Image (cartoon, rainbow, N blue to C red; front, top):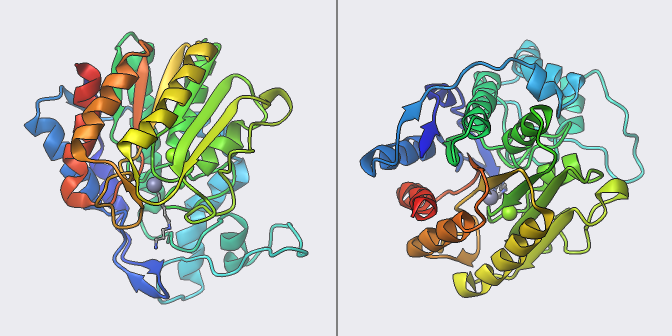
Length: 341
Ligand SMILES: NCCCNCCCCCS
Ligand SMILES: [Mg+2]
Ligand SMILES: [Zn+2]
């Protein structure tokens, strides 16, 4: 299986994440991608390719122009105000307030985000753009006939909505790739999110559409991020009714239980008969993950990959979460090796 990787992910080297009332070194750090890349090479998974540039057009198919403009200029505008730290949202439109876009940078940060753990800093724009190019380059490999390809994206994307950043995400790499498949002639695309957290951005982008089936297995949002979306009664709206599936699990869920949800999701995908499958691959389902509460073991990721291969679909893997950096390489490549059989 080919991997697409860009060293430009290093441009996203934030120094602060708001956690527990203090600023900590971010969980979503460059070592994640480097550890995965090293394991890809160590296991001789396949060729590692640089991304081709795809420009803004594919991003504009999913994210609004004003949101893209905001991301491009946020750091400049923040610095212009002489703020000492990284750009972190601190004020939002609470219930009963207005949903209008303010001029001020603090207001705009709140308007375009849903969480405060994700800072914007110098280079975030470049890294987020490169992650999209990585996803689209891998998508082109699959559209061009490869059975599967791995987009080693960093920063991740599944929490990013049309006009929202958060959860370490800025552009929805998997969603942009799904739209690219459709723009190139696919009729139906399924996005299966196996990250520990609900893919709220992916769900909301396609919530009223039936040409993209979105499915996510994740920790009960009553207990974990993103807290305000991802419940099992969210099944889609309008044309999209029936084309969103959320399966939630409690703390300490082991693979034996989690795989039942995977089976349900796989059956739904078979019924949907998509032209392509995108796996939003987070491995924060791992038993040692520092911010999650499932109990999957490294060997379970081999089984996960095997099960996904049985769907027999052209498959794009986009890298999402996973924060036990020592184990992330083994766990990610186990999925891909399991898939290859
Ligand atoms: N104290 C941990 C808070 C985590 N909040 C964001 C989680 C984003 C996961 C991305 S896959
Ligand atoms: Mg998920
Ligand atoms: Zn996650």
